Image 1 (cartoon, one colour):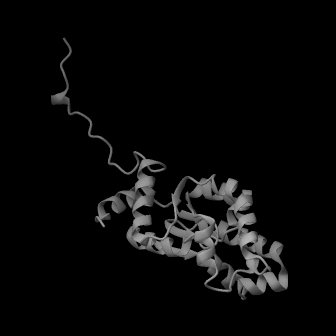
Image 2: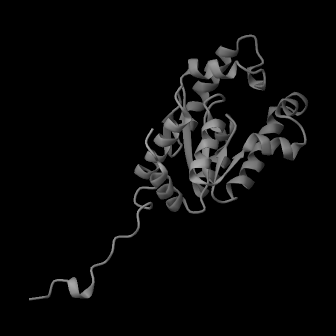
Image 3: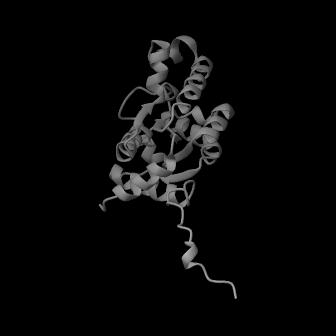
Length: 206
């Protein structure tokens, strides 16, 4: 694919100290694409779920099983509030994180959000590869995933940009993200200010 280094430098310059926050359903590629995006932009990558596990001293599966989803969401909200204040980075969030109004407000104030949108069949193919999704531990995981997707879509749609996640190379998705950023949230900010005409070049008044 084409070299996107110049575009990446432009995005990085315009981004300043703001984080890029990846949102979307489990299996949409937030971590995989987010890591590659962070590499291209030369900023750190942070996985909110990993930070939640560090803070809690237990796995997310154990948090759900022992303490319940409400406890998990409270911790998730606090951890993300801390992370989004951490400057330039690519932050991958859990599938339910953007449901929190407090989290959406914090992300909107501090950074730029990207919804990686994926079709149900794509999500299911990916998530069923591993048995580590506490919300899908049901007799009918696909029905549960469809239900979650319908509930969460209106919240994901509030993200600053939307990029389709599908089975292509991560660099293809990253290139689309960079292009959307400079055409949308970073429009104008990624370009140096236009030079002002010098005094000698200005038209003389009649």
